[in-house]
Picture 1 (cartoon, helix red, strand yellow):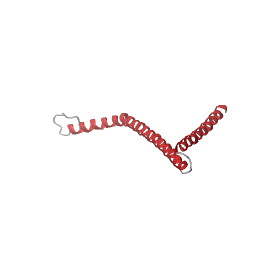
Picture 2: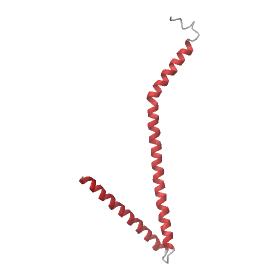
Picture 3: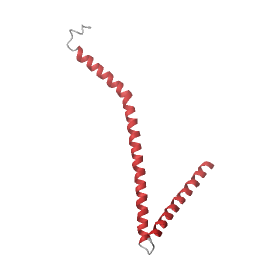
Picture 4: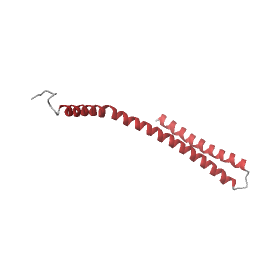
Length: 109
């Protein structure tokens, strides 16, 4: 039987619990998916940038190591530098040619 809210001592806590439950349900259906998508995007981009940075640092380290290896032979330092650049350029050109061949074979089929 409905009673007067002013005389019911449990009316305020029940109303507060109901409001909290409804707001929680609305929040779960609206903001939680957006937060998950945003976190995925932010962490994905962060991982991408860190991965690209790691690849660049690795290439620089490999190039310097190759130059130091060539420096051990009786070759001048300037010659060792351009030999390492030429070798790395050749590797990149070879990878580019392979990529272009795969691209053309996908378009034909």
